[in-house]
Amino acid sequence: MRFLSVSVNSFLIEFNHLSETTNFFRQLKQLNHPAILDMIPAEKTIFIQFSNLIIQQKELIHWLSKQEIKDLTAELGREVVIPVSYQGMDLGQVAEFLGITVNEVIRRHTESEWKVAFIGFAPGFGYLNSENAPFGSIPRLSSPRKQIPMGSVALAGEYAGIYPKNSPGGWQLIGHTDERMWDIHRDPPALLLPGNRIFFKKNTQGASVFIDAEIKTNNLHLNQNLEKIPVLKVLRVGIQVLIQDYGRQGKFALGVGVGGAMDKGAMQYANECVGNPLNHAVLEILNGGFHTQVQCSTVIAVTGADTDLYIKYKDGETEIAKTYQPIALDQGDEIIIPPPKAGLRSYFAIRGGIAVNDVLGSKSFDTLAELGPQPLKANDYIYTAQTMQSAVLGQRIKCDYLLPKPSETVVLDIVLGPRLDWFDKQSLETLKTQSWLVTSDINRIGLRLMGEKPLKRAKDIELPSEGTAIGALQVPPNGQPVLFMNDHPLTGGYPVIATVADYHLDLVAQIPTGCMIKFNPISDFMDIRI
View (cartoon, one colour):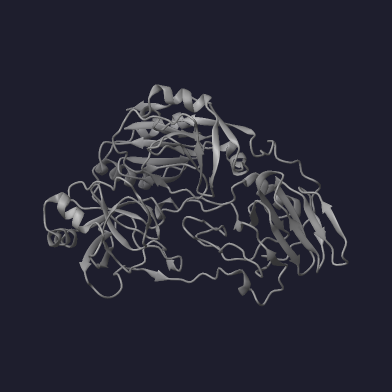
């Protein structure tokens, strides 16, 4: 085993073969170490997320290194039958690469038993492998497509896969299925789970066979609480307004990340100001532009970005209120939040929280998985979760970092690894000394950065997909890093050179386009071989 640094509360274990990875993952699930919070198995790695309040990293690594990798007999997985129309745009190209006919490609695909080795890339995307390796290793496309249709059946390397949603991708497309790989109204929402046995059938009609699959519906829409009196009516939303809380814990097995509020400190402050528990759902407002009208007396607070907060009272008077403090409002009052002067995201808390159903244990909207209540739009109504009698707290101390403005430079601490050794020696110096521009290509999935000198790889081989953390600096072939954020894919196929320290993630959430970032390594690269 090889242990590689990721962050202060996560690391990678690397193995030689998929069988070792799978066996050790099964062992860890059986052992159920109390400090291991969640795991992401991949082809040759297991991503370990742990609690450093329970155990120190070195102690956990020592314990893991003492566990012998046993050849465990896998449980007979559930059987899933997938009907496929074999008309993929790359089917002929795959046949030509293998030196066989198209019909032979289809025969090998349908006569093989496939197993879900692991989940990654996107929620519900299963990496399927077959013991007889019917196609050997199929190369990915040299230039990934910007849009692959949902339901596309594809091959890459020794794996088969089915795209659960419209998304970019570089796999070779051989067919299409109408079966839904990911459905939030199903329990579990992922059709394919690790260990499932998959059989592809040509032109088969009917639903997939998925034992014990249970359909449950989720009432997600804000406006369906008709028996309650709404507290707010949305008049304008600006770029984006989402409901967010702490996010989803322990859902890596489904391919679902934590997500949740980008600036969790600001979310906590907002809830504390109105007397809510710290984990209550709030509104996350991107770059201002939000306008809402009060429908019944309430107490609100706004934190996060440095913005003016206009209160237009029902008598026509308008005043600028302070952020980071509770504000009592009556029916007919209006709240207007313009674009911020510094920072990027505001957090709007309502006394009593927000009434919307949990999905997989959270009220947050995940933009990658498309989980949770949809983004707010004009004329939506917002309801409180419960009636609370709670003391209003005094004015809170604002965040302990300066909110960045465009063209300013932000310094972020980073933990080196897990793939620092995939880059040449000069790249580490470039990473540390160069200022990186935050481009306009930013969202809750990540920030695309650009530097004058790109990072250069020392290894040109393809990296098997592996687990990544929030804050990971993944480096695609062009050498310009992408800083992964809350809704990032759980696994990635490009090497990660470093990961932003956990205590700077709230700051990252407030960095607008046009800022410059400088990275400050706070630890040496950990590479322990057992």
